[in-house]
Image (cartoon, rainbow, N blue to C red; front, side):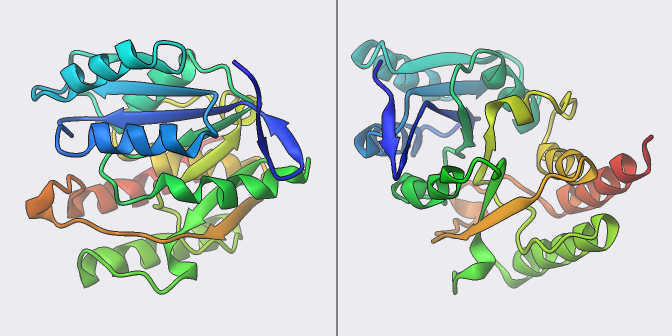
Length: 238
């Protein structure tokens, strides 16, 4: 497959889509990624779905056999596990993590990729807090703000949105982190390991369309507690 051109650079973009029971949105999301014509490969990594998500993904794989790859597990282990399985088969220069729930729009890829025109940029996060975005709930928003402040205190950083699901890495960087977390704590783990190794995280403002719990949002308050524990664990680990 030919390289996709973004700004001043040619690169291979691997989009990893971890998913669990997202039959309402998975096909729409993947077709949005395809329509953007920036992905070198789209890796759909199942986390033990029990609905029709896998059937929809396999149908798309048959339609776009040179673009879509399939990975994952028949057992529900968590987002981190699904991301790691996708990483294991990725071949791109840039890795982009894309949730399957349509909260994050693939039309923003160009803006997220532009900082990589600078060879010194290794990691880019799409920040919801650099734009005036709506929130699924005030408590969810406040939890994210507090989590980012904890990160900045622990790691002497200045990021505004640690828990964003739009995270991009140069492939060799994220593959050097020896990731181990299975669940939503993938996000604080990868942030911790990046900052502990003194990688700068470049933030780009994004548009965010939150969904409610009734619409399928899976993250819970306990995940925030686990995130804080994860940040502390990796900060203190030698």
